[in-house]
Image 1 (spheres, rainbow, N blue to C red):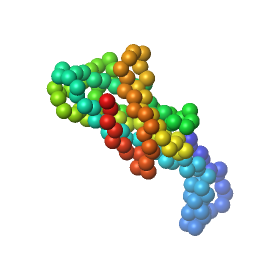
Image 2: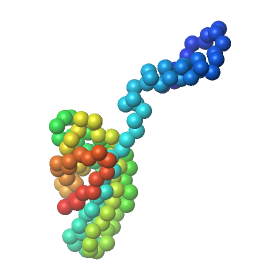
Image 3: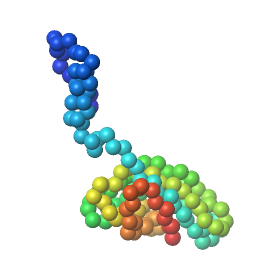
Image 4: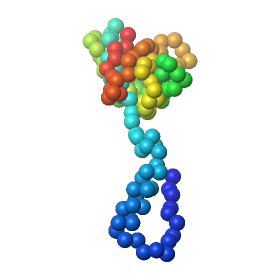
Length: 139
């Protein structure tokens, strides 16, 4: 939102310009200025050769103690449905999911891939940390 200060017939001195700027910043809700994301580094053990994986855009982080949830914003090293990503024949496969901010009150959350078929990713009871960067195993 853009807010214009009313025109004044007074001449502004440098001191008054600084004061106007401070008053303007003080009136902005600090929560609006905070841009934070949740980074979830996922490790997927490859159980059989020739596997394909993908992530649905309906994947969310759900606060375990409220109705709050974070939306998936970006995924790296994994395709969005309906496309598929072929994974190596063995070992671990890594990908990154970036979500919008969790509610500040959140202390524990679930990673839930809400899809219209069986087999969605689900990792329950992830303990929140101060950095909002997580490394999880998806089994």
